[in-house]
Each structure stands twice: as C-alpha cells, then as structure tokens.
Image (cartoon, rainbow, N blue to C red; front, side):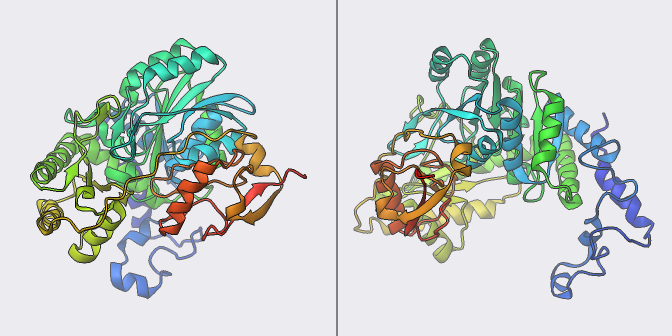
Length: 484
C-alpha cells in the first residue's frame, strides 16, 4: 500500500474545497460558528476539519472508503491482521477486548496492575476475573513484569480461563515477556490481549523492546496520542491473529464507541500513521537518544537515582528507554514533592509522581533544551543536599482482597454509604484507585481489607489524587447493601 497517502485528510480537504452549503451536524458550520474568544487565540483553519459523516467522508462504524483505507494502512504499518480507529481512547479498546474474549461468567486472567478500564470491560461483559500478581519492587515502589511461570500455573489450576489481559509496557515502561506469555496462552486455547496504551512507538526502533503484535498478541490497544503524535483521546485497536473474532470485535466497538466520531481525531490518527510509516525510525531513535542523555546526566548527580536497565532483572525484565523514572528519595524528597518542586521552581512539567518516583515521558518532539532544563533542575536540588526530612517509604502494597461478587454483580447491586472509617470488612460498592496511574486497590465486589484501608487512608490524608469513590474527600464510602 502507498504509505504516503493520508486518505481521511485527503477526503476532508476535497469536501472543504467545495465550500458546500452545509446542513449537517456539527452546528458550528466549520469556522463560522466558533466563539471568537477561541478563534482569536488559535485561528480558524482546524475547525473546517470538524465534520461528520458527510458526502465522501465515510462512516467509522461501517467504513467503505477513506476510513477503511486509513485503517488498512495502519494495519500494514503495525503488522496487524486488522486495525480499528478509536475515538474514545484506549479505554474503549480495552473494553472491546474484554467483551470479545470473555462473556457472562467466563474467566479472564488479569494482573492486578491493569488499568481501571479493564474492570469497566468486565462490568459490561460479566466476565469473572482471575487475578494474578506481577512482580513488585519494594525499593522503587513500582509494579514490574508478569512472570510466565505464574501464568502457566494459573492455567494449570484453571484451564477454563479464556484469555490473559495485561498491560505492557506499563506506565513506567516495564515490559513483560509477551512471546513466552503468548505461547502459554495459545497452548491452552486462550487469547493474549495487551493493553499497549504506552507502547505504540515500540514498533519503530531497535533501541526499544518489541511491540506486542510482533510477539504473538492476539489483540492489542494503543494510545497513539500518548507518544506517537495524534490528538488526545485517539487510539487504535489491532487484531494480531484469527483467534480474535473480527465480527465480534466490530460489534463490540459499536457498543463502546461514540456514534458521532470526531473527524479531528481520526484525521490525526491518519496523519500520525503517515509520520510513523515514513519517519518512525528516525523519530523513535531520537526519543531514545534524548532519554539516554538525560539518564546519563542524572547518574552523575548525588542523591538522585533513576530506574535503569539491569536493575532488579527479575522485576524489571525489559524497560522502554524513553520512560525516565527518577527519585530524590535519598535527599528526603518524596516523588510527590519532587514533582511539585520541579514545576513550581523550575517550570518543568512531568507526567506522574508516586511516593518514591517521578516519571518523565520523553518523545521525538522533545528538545535538548527540555532535557537540559530537567537535568539542570535536578542538579540544583542535588547540590542543595539533604533537606533534613526523613525519607518517606511507600507502604507495603496490600494483597489481593477476597472477591465476594463479580464486578458486574457488584455494580448493579444495591448500595449504601457508610463513614469511611467503618468501611473495613465490607463489600466494596465502588473502586479505590490512586491516580495516576489508574490501578485500583479494590474493585467493586471485593472485601475492603484493613491493609487496603490503611494504604488508602494515608493516601487520602496526604491529599494525593484518586478516582472511584463518589465522595471526592473519601469521608464516606459506598458498600454493597447485603440487606437487598
């Protein structure tokens, strides 16, 4: 196929050149109906691309023209059997993977560090989760790789499991041995599903780990917007083998995607795919080189450490070099504090923080000046020395709570609110999810144990962000009402 084409962009350009009398949705009529408060700041050009399924622009839910061609071009670039554009983010891709693998009462093997969107998929499908723990670094406070031997044991104990859905690479760039995991899943007639939200760039540089499709994944969902150049909320879902029922996937995507898909998002996917096809290796090699420069500079700073290849190899099997995870814990500065200091004092904005670490995502669009500002700020802090504060260590992660109800059963069950301090020992009616990175400590239907409560109570007292509870201050908590 001709990877120099951008079919969706070309179709939109052909339509807008006609300047038709426009009686379609959306109502702003290209640039004419947009608030001047906005257009005065950003101009008017892009608003002509915010269209709907008008003449010649195809239909995402039944693509026959430009969208179909754009998706076929994407499949060729990533090495997929089929590719689908997503306008509801990778969240809807994860939901579609769950729905396409495990139905009501069927079992899905799920590592505990999956994103909360996987739980949403289980609520929709009625799948019964079987949880497994990935490796965990007590020193770093970071979830690591998923060991193949744990997955083999899980299938040996329960061969009715329909599939494994894991995240690789993780938010911190930790990759699992997907090739080994695929062989295990396939030997039991199960599918390997990969939340590859943070890994679309892995297909374009030998300096990075291999992508999921190249290691035997049957389906994977990617956030193209995260590091590969499309607009926020635009993603792709890829089918890697005939084990994934294409018709079922298409039907499930119609269930979880908007019926008014954004042509801005789809055009951005089309353009990002073009850049990856033509310049992808150059782009991702540059990102890896910038990250290595930052890592080399940080290694020389007393009191600052960064997660590096070869560290705790059983936990961190392989790392995405473009994810820079660093800590000033030896200076008595927590990750949360360090993130605030970097922004407030030095104007350096980073992706996320936890008790120990700060994560910087480095892409091809960063500059050497960006790297210098980050490493220069860390050098200043290193030179200032220890703050005199006691180093805050993460609490030991709580174990997997007992499951009393499936996520779907709990979601539709009657609930009531109790004071947060009285929620211990009750069946959770909502999830508790420190955010980022969006990994639930407790799912609806699980018993809220004392150690989960203590972990979350510290998180709450210290004012860190979390998702899930209806009460944003977590003074009360929804539990399943057993009386119903």
